[in-house]
Amino acid sequence: MQSSCFGRVSRRSTLARGLRAATVAAFAVAAVAALPVNAADVTPEIENRSDQLDVPFVPSTNAVLNTMFEFAKPTKDDYVMDLGSGDGRIVNYAVSHFGARGHGIDLNEGLVKVANARAKSAGIADRAQFYVRDLFKEDLSKATVITMYLLPELMMQLRPKLLALKPGTRIVSHDYHMGNWRFDGAKPVSGRASGEDDVVYYWKVPAKVAGNWDWQIDYSPLFPGAREYKAQISQRFQDVEGKLDTGALPMRFFNARLDGEKISFSASGEVEDRVVQHDFEGVVDGDTIRGTVTLRGPIESRTFPWTARRNKAGK
Ligand SMILES: C[S@@+](CC[C@H](N)C(=O)[O-])C[C@H]1O[C@@H](n2cnc3c(N)ncnc32)[C@H](O)[C@@H]1O
Image 1 (spheres, rainbow, N blue to C red):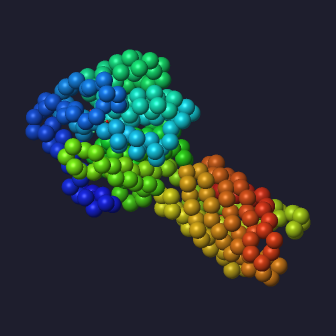
Image 2: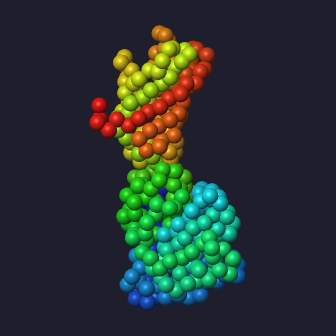
């Protein structure tokens, strides 16, 4: 069992209690008393078939949905996938409130029917669909936003698949985190009748930047022609360290930040016998990074084009 960063180990109890109840009775009936997306939408009682499900149906509250979307900020250009979509409230909310598109998957056929019926009655069935499918077998590559309310062990099983998604994909989870993949945001949400808080966690899938890179900085007109360097980057999820080999002392990165496909860091190096701070900013596109380097310090600030290409031979 994981403890949350807010130190409330017992706070996983809302879902864990649901799981226990479903396990005790093979065909337990879901607890569906939480707030629905629209006041008129009261989820009918649906069998929670614990012999098939990895986690029972316990719906996220409206307050949790709002916090999830405060982090994920869906727009009409987003494709939202809810893994274990229950009565469809998350995808239907994202589609009706933010104009996104998306789909949900759930192994509970009754809930999938409810979710599709709600999309239809809201007039959004062309943009929100629900399918009876196993979340572990789902192709997630289309998603730009992934939402989940699953148990910790399931999230850890899904983690490699989530990390392999397109850099920049936003992931929000109700109540459970993904261990040492540090979250990019977390917020407690109050409002449960029981008085317990929920928590929403947020991550952005980081680009893969670990390895050796060939760099080119075009300092013209300060210096003629482009200069070439070698760099090494190491990475642990979104945390990166690196050094740039300039022939003199290696320039170590500081203030490094990887935000999806966007990378930025600083390094100090000599320019004309003066120590100058180099602020790099770029966008990672597979094996290429394109961006700029701004020189600051005891010289007039100037910005130059910077390109990095992955050196697959490791030289
Ligand atoms: C805790 S509920 C969350 C419902 C919804 N996402 C929400 O937050 O309101 C988890 C859902 O996952 C579904 N589920 C469990 N195991 C699944 C699996 N292997 N594949 C797809 N759905 C699954 C359950 O039927 C249940 O509806």
